[in-house]
Image (cartoon, rainbow, N blue to C red; front, side, top):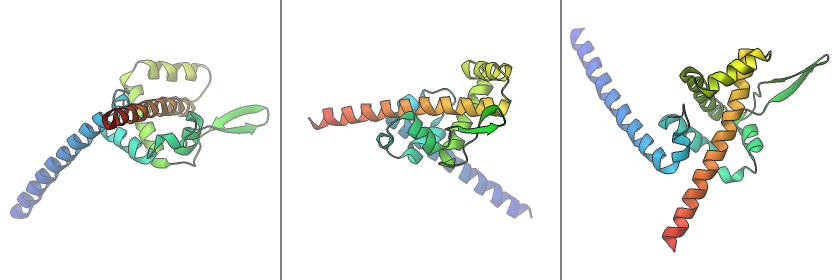
Length: 163
């Protein structure tokens, strides 16, 4: 039993080192490919890699609203009597949505503008879930803007290198 436990611990150490190596490589690649995205508070290398990979080519989206529909953060209007609300869009790319959710939760935890935004929405009468949904949409718009900016900088740099 002790021998098996030692082998398992050694394998866990080996796998942990491998994961850390891969994570550093991914973060280095993201610093090259999407420096604007990495500078977004709450967005680390792995979340940036997920956003870049799942978005594929950001130029295929004509606007931030189209990107929001793709990632599932565009709100869906719901009416109940005379009350108009918005609910979570269950369509769209769930991998992008969960990456945006991770960024939103991290920004809330860090405090700052995101936490103030959530507090303001809750005092306006939204539930915390509705406020987080609205924050995710704002983050989606910011991610779209930064992805477009990084894409145009890469395109400009590749044209300059070719010339």
